[in-house]
Structures are given as structure tokens and as C-alpha cells.
Length: 104
Image (cartoon, rainbow, N blue to C red):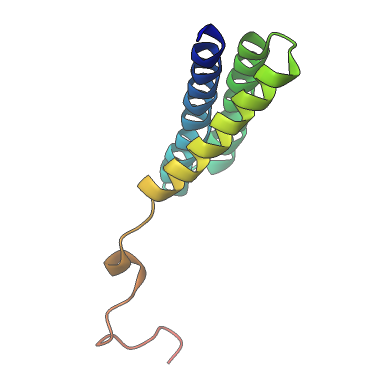
């Protein structure tokens, strides 16, 4: 029972790290797209997000391959969740048909 709880906690910790990383990426793209200095946003973001995730993997994994693998599993699952949550609505992606295309 204790092993199952530890494995679930490790997967959950990986998922939290994944949400921090990929949610931070989404937030950075939103802010960087409208910023006068987007390179600072993207460079600072990748450094901060990578440092947080590496420190988290180091703390959670504890040098054990099974725990690192489970943490990575949670990280990848969080990626799928963040992609689904931040997906644009179909109305935002599809331009209205009454508009003339910009190249016409």
C-alpha cells in the first residue's frame, strides 16, 4: 500500500511540474507576443521553467530510476492536459467566411 501511495505521489508531483512548465510556456507566449521585447520574455522564461523542473525532478526522483520514470510520466500527462485546456476555440481559429482574404 505504501508503494502505491508513493508512486501516485510521484506521478502527481511530475504532473505539477508539467503544469508549471507547459502552463508557464503558454503564459509566456501570451505575454511575449504583445511585448516590445519578446526575446527577454522567452529567454527568461525558458531559464526559469527549466531550472524549476530540473530541481523538481532532482528532489522527487531522488536518484531512483523508477521514481524518475514515474515523475516523467506525470510530466508528459500534464502536457496533454495543458494542451487540451489551452486549445483555442474553433471560432477563434476559423476566420469568418464573409471576410476577404488578406492576399486577395
